[in-house]
Image 1 (tube, rainbow, N blue to C red):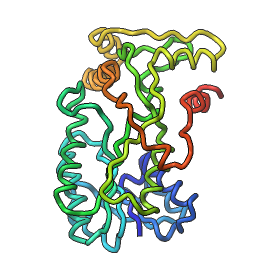
Image 2: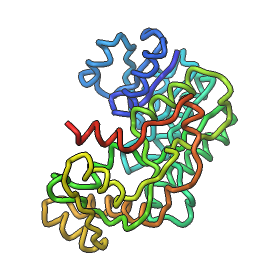
Image 3: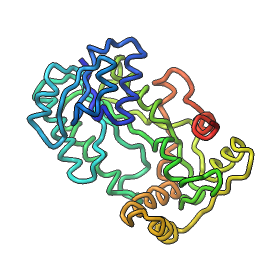
Length: 288
């Protein structure tokens, strides 16, 4: 039995879809969810629903019983994330789960980064998981291609990209292909105690993304490069909380410093084919 945490999230659901497409019976997949009412799509697929919360250790004990392989998708909550991850890992160990796969981050340096509040949790979780002696696999993910729309701003085809990422590049990968990579590791052997860089073969700057969008839209899409202070100021003027604006600006700074352009990728090996080109992904979003 495979357990997918964060199953109502986009990455969790993409993993489940990929498992099913690979022929894994739905009754051999369990989904950890906090609210069964939000899991109707999973129920319709025939997935076994297990109720649990990262902060509720007893619920995790119950949810991980009879599980052989577990995908731990990192918590989306910014408070107590390490405690939450440890709860999942400890419950899995107590129930003798054979293999834990964790979704971490692929970054050049945990010590020199513009987003330590985001990246450090992944290092700490990975170190803790390794220290348990359990069999593990680390899927060190780059930034989702799906986030480009969020980073670029609303009405990007009309207003242009407004993001403080300078000339930095990022090897974006879609959540769908990250889910497919996770499904491969969950269903095949040879991944024990290994780390994989889930990144695209090619990194792109936002200037290049603007050029791709221009081709797709048939008109010029400009890339505006505000400094961080201006970016935060404009977002707050638009009604976005300053904390959220600063959070997004941190990613812009990290991309601008090429923190995610690590020049390593295991995605093609795991998928058994070349990953989707960014142009194709953007066309699926903006070419409609």
